[in-house]
Image (cartoon, rainbow, N blue to C red; front, side, top):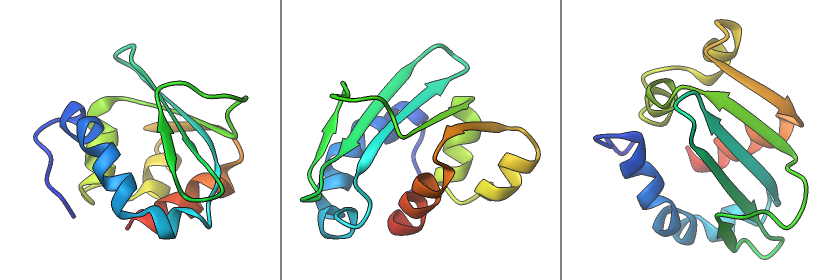
Length: 108
């Protein structure tokens, strides 16, 4: 797991992470929206060929996640289990949670 100093550092690394994972991402096309409790919104669309588009969705998101940036960073760094975060209501998910769990499994 990569250790990012901040959630913003992770967001800035997303394009290169997505490029590295392109072949694995082909298995998980979809549109995802991330809303932080700090008021930031991040959108990513994974195309069927594994390419990713960051910033604006061309369709309604399949899955929307809402959480604090601190909790999201803890999940990314492996310090907080995503299932536990859901149970503790540290993150909220609307839409197709199976898409999200597949994406998390691909990136780990």
